[in-house]
Image: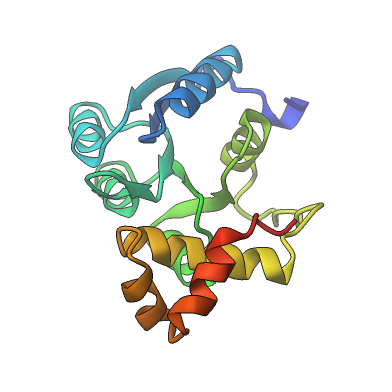
Amino acid sequence: MTQSQKLDPQQDASLLIVDDDKPFLQRLGRAMESRGFSVEMADSVSEGMAKVRANPPAYAVVDMRLNDGNGLDIVEEIRSRRPDCKAVILTGYGNIATAVTAVKMGAVDYLAKPADADDVCTALMRDPEEKAEPPENPMSADRVRWEHIQRVYELCDRNVSETARRLNMHRRTLQRILAKRAPK
């Protein structure tokens, strides 16, 4: 953590992390505690909402897609109870539309998984006027396409026919794509 990212000892360092990937949640929680945050963790929208209502945090790191709903609902609840909260959205399915929605709902940044604790801390501590640096290794167009297909496939409960219909793609073409490894 750089000098500009250090927490002021008098500053409220309460941090809520909401993610349904429990190993990731535990790792990130420990890493953020070592950086001086007072961490609360939740693994669902309902648990996250309960923690926000009990004690709105100064900082939040929320996964976009959770098993029981959308993480943006938590960000909206936080912003209604504590407008000065700095919230960061994490997602494995990044796209422009959800990034814009996250920012409109009050998130200060939007990070693609897997994000490490340094990325999260940098996003939380960044001055709101400061622009984020572009990624060093952006995904290739083939990888972005593959990620989109995987996301739609998961949203269709791994139903190949329904996924092909939604993507306006022939079912056999989709099966060939799904059988291949992810592009770099």
